[in-house]
Amino acid sequence: MKIMMVMHTFNNFGGIINHCEHLVAGLKELGHEVTFAYLKGNKTVRTVEIPTQLKEGYEIGVGTGYPVHQGDGWIAPYYSYKVKESVDKFVEDANQHDLVIWQSIFGFKNKDTEKSLTWLPMVERVTAKQVPIIHDANLKKLYPWIQIFEKHFSGLACVHPAAYDSADFMSVDDWIRAVPHMNEVETLVGGNGIEAAYMMSKEKCKEEYFCTASYDPDRTPEMEGNRIWENAENSGNFKYLGFISGAKRDEILSTSKFLVDPSWSNTFGEHFNRVVIDAMRIGVVPIAINFGVSNNEAGQGVVLKAGVNYCMIKKGSTPKQYAEKIKEYCNMSEEDYRRIQTNNYELIKQFDRKVIAQHYIDLALGKPTGYLNELKTKTNHDPSIARNGRKMFEDHYRA
Image (spheres, rainbow, N blue to C red):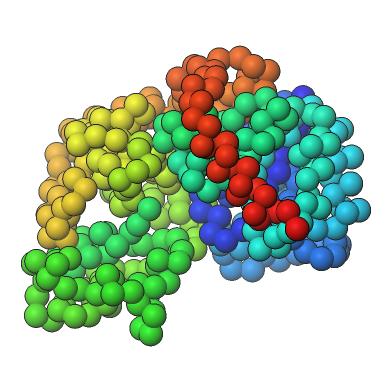
């Protein structure tokens, strides 16, 4: 099968970069031919020179073969969804494929496309099968307008239960607050985003990112009133890494005992970040929040289960309670550690990129597939979702 993998440029790629690279690699390993299609909102389309020497932070993508940076994206040829000739070229190229996979269909809605429908043929005139990927639980809230194009889609590929449930029609400050309470634990923090920028900023730090009694009842006088980022840095056991390549991530994980995913949500339901699976693959035991990787107090998810696949911290723990749990896990018996490792080595077989890649092929062909081996059809017929989606589309795109 000939497959086009489409990716927009947007702020804060997060785990989507690695998802894209490994999905492309998995499809290629299954014997499919894959084209990487990079979309930008540029006013012109220029030839892109691929550098022979990579700048710091870049690596060659395992799937696309193009240089990629976890924060800045790819250095690769691109199509512009603002230039008619480029849009026409995309349609022509896409229609030479059997399947188009949309990594970021939500990327069409941005300031560059306000009152413009130049991009529309990239969906409506593509005759190949199309499968958009739903990476989070925000489908109903942020881009329900894609329902307008559902007749063009063979199905939606949802990466975790929260995304799956959202298709029926994340914060790190807790971790930073806990750092000063666990001086014996070396803490490395990677990645970036708008909230991290607020935490680090001396001038624009949000009120909630200061150390106060309401957030940390066990604070010391030295911590009182400081930015929580400053307190973490002053602990002497904290290092911020910023954006790191996949290779650097694996190098760090190979010398780590635990990977902490501090994200949680009151509304998302069960979700987990890709880095949790990366940690399992290397043999590192994850520590996560019950209402992050599950949707219940006990932390028992469809995919990840507390005490079986990860070590649980309860949402709402104080910074000291959070730290005490981390220290407790750092002292767990080797037998318990090895047991979780073994469970996860078995679990991640289902996340092998060739296995995942085959799920996309099966979905496009209308077969039951995925972790649940299902092919769910529309179950939510709430007319307000369609109305809201149409209004969002009209307000943003129509002149």
